Image (cartoon, rainbow, N blue to C red; front, side, top):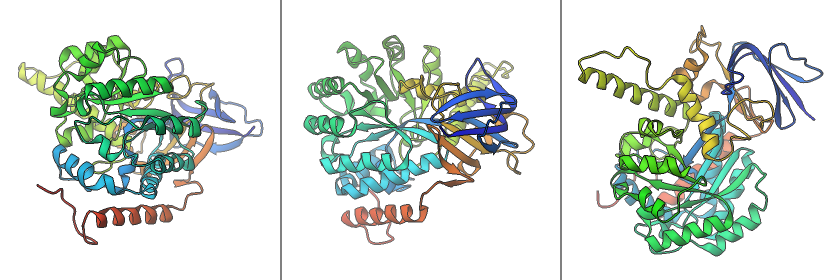
Length: 455
């Protein structure tokens, strides 16, 4: 059994029993965290010098469409309607299986490079069975941890759809690729829900997902599409429950948050994209007020950053701005504790994500016995030194360039600031070729700028 001992690091455990430790050690044995504490015996372990570093749990992204990495930043100045017109109507149908593979591969490596060890991949461009196979194979090739949520084909997604999910292929994917739930890449279902499919199709989709016994993720409350009480309808039809992750939640009615909390479902916020495209303000405070644990996601690479450091900052600063503005309206200044702390933001990006994915018994904190999903950041450079507050440094100054090493289930996938065993140039060339193919099929000349038709 391989043993690795990280010594003399500042450890953010996200475990209330352990807290944060300075000058401490973390021991990895095989796939698990064996111990966290001071002066742990090395006993022949590989030693990692943790002086000047911060060690934290791998971050967990609970909502990302990895296949869209091929279209990075194409929608930088688009509205949500333009995004649907451009990505869904005009581009999604041109993806070949190899283009889905390229997007998933590049997006998964991007996540690992930034210290995101687990991603819920909302894979909703399953145009053929070969597309589904390519999506799964790309994720498995990276050695990261993923919940690959099987979605619909491009044509089946166009709202409001009366086309059912390809149940036969979903069953095939479950049997062929996910016969065991005890593997790094697991299956989920990305369901359109009542906002984007008919009610009868939604009922059929839910029945399929529960037949397969997998996690369900659904968009609710994302802008104008979410104002017709989608959560209330799901609850009335017995579709909510602990196996459901509700993404966005911005434009839900107030009582729908209590309905969510009572059902035991989870929430995934993607504040960058939500503010950019008009979904509404992040639902952080409304979720916290009903006792829910918000988790975080990137959503799409088409118009925002691909790392959770930025998302943690965004949600933190938005909530603080709201609190200051509320105080100012009362003619006061905010003297009490800020509404979201840097500790809270780290929990949103780690243990809350693990709870949302029903994996908190395995990941989300540096608890002995859990899988060793571990991130080591350099904190001894000009950007972070002197280090006075580890949580503050991670949330307010962190970025992927500071991520020195990453372990997933005890396997080191990044070391010395580089992904292990990855030809990054080849990955970039692959995703570039897919970008060129998809845009060419959409009628965009080489080097031209794509803009959705009709806008």
